Each structure stands twice: as C-alpha cells, then as structure tokens.
Length: 535
Image (cartoon, rainbow, N blue to C red; front, side):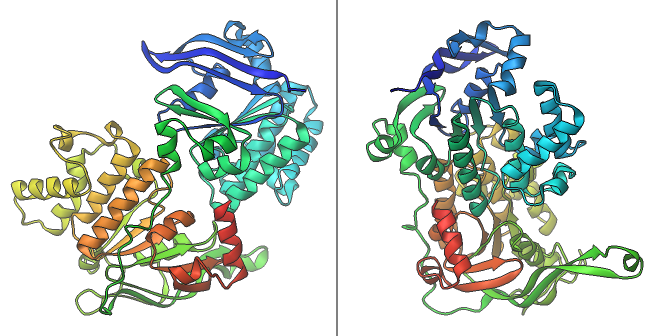
C-alpha cells in the first residue's frame, strides 16, 4: 500500500519585490520518505524549504502548500507556530549562527519542550539530555551545560538535530546539514539521520549539493535550476539515466585528475622543508597547581614533510587532527618548534618580526576556505588585489599597478571586457566562484613560490569546484608554484595532490606519493578515512 502524501506543493511561486525566484514548482513528499532536493547555490532550494514553513517574511507566496490536505498558505500565524516544530521541523545549514550563543544547548532544547510540550523545567532538562544522548553526543549531561562555542562542529550539528526532533515531527527539513563538517563527521551525521528516520518513521527533505550524500541517503531526487524543478524521480534512475542537461552536468562535475600537473622530471630543491615540526598551545591545569604551572596541548607533534616546486602536498585528516595548526605554522601565524625552512634567498625561516619576515611573506601566500569571509566588504576588487603589490613593491606607479591587477585577474578568468566596472566592484557583487578567483588573484599578484590552499573549494557548488580546481592546476603548470593543500574532500585530494600527509591527533600516521596513499593505504586510520570520504 502506498504511503499517504504528507506534503504536496502545487504551483508554488516565491517572489521578492516583484522578482520571482521560484517558478511554480510541483513536488510531493510521502510519509516516511527520504527526498533530496539538489541544485547549485541560487537554484531556490533553501527558499523553497523556508516557504513551506512561511519563514520568508518579505516574500510573496502563491500556489498551494498542502500539509496533510490543509493549505499552509491560508493558515493563521498562530496555527503556523503550532505546526513549526510540532509537525514540521528544520535543521539549518550553519549551527553556529542558528544556535543562541547566550544559552547552553540544553537550555535551548528545553525551551522547545517547555513551549511546545508543556513540560516543567526539570522534565525538559532531563529530556534534553536524553535527546542529546540519542544523537550520539558523548557525555550528554556535561554537553547539555555547554554553550555552542564550546562544542565542535559535529556536536553543534547534533544539538541542532536534537532540538529539531524534540517534538517528534512528521517531516524534517534538513538544509545542507553536513556542509560544515569533515568527511568522517559527514558520514556519522548521514547515518544518524538514517537511523532516526527509520526509528521514528518521519519523512525527510534533504537539501544539498553533495551528490555523494544523495546517493547514500535519498529514496527520490528532485533537481532545481534557477527556481525551476527540472527533473525528479527515483534515486537509482536519476543517477543512472539523468534526462535533463543540467542534471547530467551536476553528475559530471566530480573533480578530475586528467589535468594534474606532472611531477618535474628533474629533481629540484624543496620550496618548503619541515623537520620535526611541533605546535603546542598553553592549557591551564585544574586545581591549585594551575596557579603556578601551565600544561600544554600538543596540536602537531614532530611532523616531517617537504614541498617541491610545481608539486602539491595534500594534508588530510579529521577535525582536530592538526591540519590547521600545520598550515598556520607554515604561514608564520603561530609559533612552532622544530625546523621550518623556505628556499628563499639561501633558505629562510620565520623570525617573528614583520620587518624581517617581509621578503618571506611575499613568497608564501594563502587562499582561505570562505571567499566571502576572507575578502574585506569595504574594499573594491581593485584595492583588494593591488594591496599586496603596493606593500611589497612601493616603487610601482599607479598605472603599472593597475595593469598588473588587470593582468592577474584575467589570468584567473575575470576579464575587464566581461566586467566593465570590475575594479570598482565590491565582493558582494560577485558569485562564490568569482570571489574565490578574486582571492586567488590577490595571492598570485606578488608571484609567490608557495600557495597554502585551506579547503579552497568546500564552500562552492560542485560545478564551480571543478572550475576552480582546473584553474589551480593550470596556474601550477604555468607558474611552477608549490601548493600545500588542506582538504577533507578525497576527490579534491585525488585531483590535485602529488604527495599526501595523513594526520590524526597531531601525529603523522602515513605519508607518501598520492597514488600509493590514496590507492593502497597502509594505516587502518587512512583506510577508514577513505571509506568515510567515499560515503
């Protein structure tokens, strides 16, 4: 017998100030079903989910949103407040911004239970701990007393799941619930949602651009492009025989190794060489002893590695493995013990002085994970890209600087003829992929020898990821730059890395050529990581 239809979208349209962004979509979700809504940023996925719960205050909604036969667009706000949480719950993409920083996670879950279920404070507190335990959080009573900033990304996302499931909803809207998590945590979160869905029998609408998640989670798939629902069907059918060109393009956007820069034929001296690199952080000791003595947390312990010109060293590991500490040490942003040498002017190390490190700072540049957060919203593109050039080459004339800026922007695919006011625009006027190209141009304009790439594509859609990776490969081929690539995406690692370093709890567990580490890993941890990435 076919399960009854829980949610039925009939000709749903969403407009902002007369501009329509969702164009009359029809979509059904049945009881107990797992439906994935996929598409790139701006396709209308999240807007559709928010429209279901009428959380778009400035939007004009039309069509019908039938919830168990009742049109939600015609319900009073009081009735909608009852439905939100009680019958339809939502997990938002970034738990750090969705959770209240002034309340413990236990208080936030308890608040839902008190308002929605009428529990007493004591009952709600006990239930909150039980819900956190159900989501797999270790030491749930202690974690319930923690504030969001005191939890890891995976723990915060589990707290969001616990809050969403507090009232046992019939439908869960999960908006990119794993984007901010590393590979092993993504796998855990996916399994958690599967287990909870099977146990409770709720339906799940998963909003994502991660096709690996869709492949392992969804019963059915619906594909959105520019506010239009272009294709929907059974998961196996969509992945095996996609009909729409847009769906075919999404499925064909896996990072490719075809353009990987070959290793230099003649051995060269390392651009960067680290011997017994160690990073520690001071940590207060509990009790009376802490008044007189400080303990230390070892974030990176005795790491040996090198990066040669024209090659990429990929660093992989879970959150807390030491990847970020390694990158910060290489960039001279934190103090480190051991030997860290750059092949600049006979071999240099960080001195901890801006004046003494100026020459080395030009040779070592970085591209961050979030292109929007790493660009100043108050600086134009021209000012942003030229800043390093003005600092390191103060003798250049304004006309020379502008020529170099336009040349570098063109090299990363942003040509002035395509953007007539390119240099006077601000970051918010560009897409995510275009902003990452601007961040690349800012780093490249000073002609560095080493580029540190900190998750350079994780914030981008799959099609844009492929474009940026292809651009990075071309730049490495043309400039013979060395890359230190930090990523939790094994497809990116396979596409970019010549050598791989595997970290866990600050220790190097395995290292070697990419074709060896990624194809025939020797350490059980590396094997488990690759299995998690593949999921």
